[in-house]
Structure formats: structure tokens, C-alpha cells
Amino acid sequence: MTWLITGGAGYIGAHVAWAMTEAGERVLVLDDLSAGVPDRLPTSIPLVQGSSLDGALLKRVFAEHSVTGVVHLAARKQVGESVAQPTRYYQENVGGLTTLLDAVAGAGIQRFLFSSSAAVYGNPDVDLITEDTPCAPVNPYGETKLAGEWLVRAAGRAHGISTVCLRYFNVAGAASPELADTGVFNVVPMVFDRLTRGEAPRIFGDDYPTSDGTCVRDYIHVADLADAHLAAARRLTAGATGDLTVNIGRGEGVSVRELITLIGEVSGDTTPALVEPRRPGDAPRAVASAALAAEELGWHARRGVREMVESAWRGWRHHHPEAARG
Ligand SMILES: NC(=O)c1ccc[n+]([C@@H]2O[C@H](COP(=O)([O-])OP(=O)(O)OC[C@H]3O[C@@H](n4cnc5c(N)ncnc54)[C@H](O)[C@@H]3O)[C@@H](O)[C@H]2O)c1
Image 1: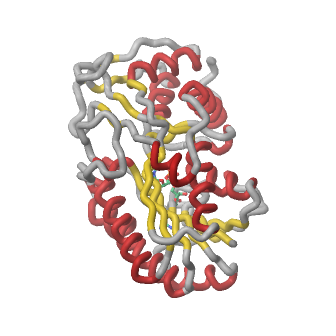
Image 2 (image 1 turned 90 degrees about the horizontal axis):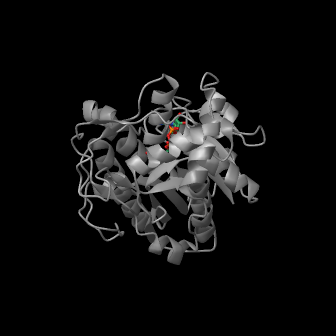
């Protein structure tokens, strides 16, 4: 087996590339480096610089490297940007996927793994989100992930490709400081960023119907997420057919206030949070049922939230030496 990992120089993709390589899989990476960092990858993993929207390049790469499976992570992923530029998001995340799937089918590749997101669910009013919870995304980013899933499953059925869609919940942490998320789009780096500038972390709304009034989320360590990709890849290699769509979370909720308290303990900066008005579109609670992943992939998360925050803080300080405390 040779796996092509699109977006493999990105935050999650590099963790997947390392985890699969360390487990003995042969991988190569395709990344246009629009957000990726080549130094995240060891020199033993070939990196092709180019776009997953480039059909001719894909055809060449598949043939030259005898690719037998694809892990597709390359995408635009910023919710706010997707609201401002919906056509770009549909063009790259959905239109681009048609090119990739055509190339996969044309090359006779029979295994395909797709990065989806809890954003496909929107804001369901349930205690635990199962894979049967209706999907009702509330922004173009989530819509492109849901349309992407439909496309992956339809192409799988039409061309005999076995597929897995992984719906990630809130990803945080780093397996090593060099691999850390360098963007400031998720809550953990957003809080680190505020503290590093000497500003108070912000909580958007503390009057939600949750235990402490702040929003509750399911945080998953990126190293556990990478292991889930390995488990899914192995399932496909073992001959699983058809399609599987599965949540990747811990099945445990953590409130924003609990998270900020933990960040204070880990960083040594306990500046009290500022409470600001609710943001439109934030669900009070979004926690995965992790049962199907355990059943189908034999996978469950092993790392807790403290370990996530500690590893994320080491990564943040690696990339921001000015964040001296902690
Ligand atoms: N980070 C999260 O919390 C989260 C949650 C749910 C789902 N996801 C999904 O996981 C995937 C990876 O996210 P990430 O956080 O690692 O983001 P990231 O921006 O760090 O990684 C994306 C990578 O894809 C590359 N890329 C983008 N467009 C490309 C293209 N057309 N061709 C080739 N390479 C391209 C970028 O250079 C980057 O290296 C995305 O599909 C994202 O939607 C992320």
C-alpha cells in the first residue's frame, strides 16, 4: 500500500503522516503549501508541492508512486472566511474534490479517507451527537464538508471505492512542539494568543443552558485523531467495502470556562476571562457519541484534556518564544 496524504504539511495532516509512517505505512504528501509547513515532515516522506485541484498532476503522482489509497485533508477550513467567500469554499472544497475523485477512479484506486467535521451537524439540541443525528450545517464551511461526504459516498458507490468519512470534533494539542497548530482559529490557540499579548481570554456568553453557563465542546487530541486515521486506513487495507461515516471525539464535554481554567493552570497565567455577548451560531453543547468509532474502528481517544492543553502550550511557546511564562 502507498497512501497519498493531501494537505499532509498542515497541522492535522502532518500528524497523520507521522503516525502512519511510524506504524509502517508507506506515505507521500501532496500539499500546495498555502497553509502547510514542509518542516513538519521528516525528509523520509516525499512531499509533492502542488494542488489537489490539479487533475494532470494527480494522474502523474498516482502513476509515479503507485498510489493505492488516498487520505484527503487538503481544504479551506475557516468558518468566517467561508461566510465571506462561499463560492471559493464550494469551488475548492467541493469542486476540487470532484477533480480528485475523478483522478482516483481513473487510476483504479479503491481506498479513500475523507476529513469531515462536526460542522456538518450544525447546532443539534441533543446530549450526544450520533452519526444518525440529522445534519444541518449553519455555515458554508460545514455545507462543503457535508456535500463532500455525499460526493465521496456517491463516487465510492459508482466506482467501487471503499470510503471512510471522519467527522472530527474540536481538535487541539500537538504530538511534538514542531507539529503544533500555528493558526489562531480554534479556542485553545485563541486563548494562548490573548494571554501572550497580556489580554484577558474571552468567553462568548455565560448564560447558556449548561452547567456553568458557557458552551460545552468535545476536545480531541490531534495525536488521537491521527491514530483514528491509521485505524481507518487499516480497516480499508483489510478489505472493508462500502462506506463508513464516523464521529471522532472523546464523548466528553468540557465547558469553555473549564478549558480556560485549565489553560491558566498549565500556562501559569490565571488572568480572569472577560465575558462578552454570545456569538451568533454557537451551539450550547456539541459532544460526540464515540461509540461507533470504537465499534467499527476499534479506536478510542487515549489522551485527556490536560495532556492536550499541556502539549498545545509547549507547541505555542515553541512558535512564540515571547510567551515566556509557564
Ligand atoms: N483543525 C480542526 O479543528 C478541524 C476540525 C474538523 C475538520 N478539519 C479538517 O481537517 C483538515 C485539515 O485541517 P488542519 O487544521 O490541519 O488545516 P491546515 O490548514 O493546517 O491544513 C490544510 C493543509 O492543506 C493544504 N491545502 C489547502 N488547499 C490545498 C489544495 N487545494 N491542494 C493541496 N494542499 C492544499 C494547506 O497548505 C495545509 O497544509 C481540513 O480538511 C479541515 O477542514 C479540521
